Amino acid sequence: MTDATISEPGDRLKPLSPAMLRELSVRSDLQGTLRSLCHYAVVVLVGSSIWKVSSSFGILWASPLMVIQGYFIAFLFMALHETAHKTAFRSRGLNLAVGYLSAFIIGQPYEYYCLFHWDHHRYTQNPERDPELIVGVKPKSDTQIALAYSGLLQVAGRLRLMLGHAVTGKVTVPWIPENKRAIIVTEARVYAALYALLLTLSLWFSSALLLEVWIVPLLIGQFFLRPYLLAEHTGCERTRNAFQNTRTTYTGVVVKWIAWNMPYHVEHHAYPSIPFHALPKLNSIVDGEIVYRGRGYIRTTRETWAWFRRNRQSAQD
Image (tube, rainbow, N blue to C red):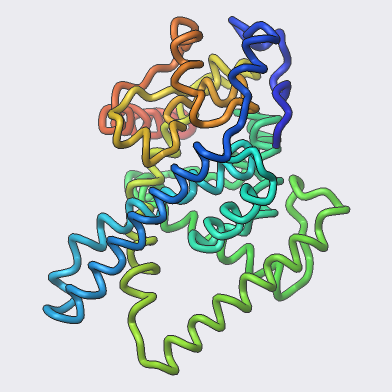
């Protein structure tokens, strides 16, 4: 997804000049490579530490490292997201390579996600057209809200959908056009076959390596990723205006690094052709126009949780 005009020009409160948009939209193989290598290096380093500690002292001693690993693995979603826009790198090949790898690790088929996310940008906050709202949970109790924030239902849902595509060969979700459905089925079957192969090898060698350094951390990481994702649009206006239907959350440098600068989410939705490394500069230009401004993810999570409770109570009245 590379079109900078997904939002109509009239939807923007403070559009950039064409020259400024061109300047900010320059992609960089260097920036993408540095961010990708650093992110993956941390995953490999922490994963190696988990395996060494677990082998020497037992899995309980490695548990804190598994929580850290979970954070970094789950947030490989941001690498998938940026490469889906084809803005992580100047090179299309590098975008695809990092995108496919990241997608496989987090269990989110790449081609499917690209089409899902394209419609999310086209129809943001439209309850009848935005895929995130269509497949999103609609909690009816505090327990269901807690499950939504755990992210586990979302992981189970997308794996079930992928297996359904692989087994039945049918794709019925509206955001996948007819001419792309064969690709989605093939992709799902390749993913399922590779996961089955890894499971078979793990059982053959009686190894818990993948379970300890990948699968369990990925599930743990959803407890960090899902509240972050829910902060992007929850409680914002149901309008096409990117400055009103999306939230930018002001947070620390570490979180911005792990999330590939996507806490600047209003900026991203208003100008989706601008790559992750230019979003801080874009924020300095449009900051005063942003309507929904989160002040850290702990506070913003409390606010979005409260929104779900109010929304639930309104629906019951």
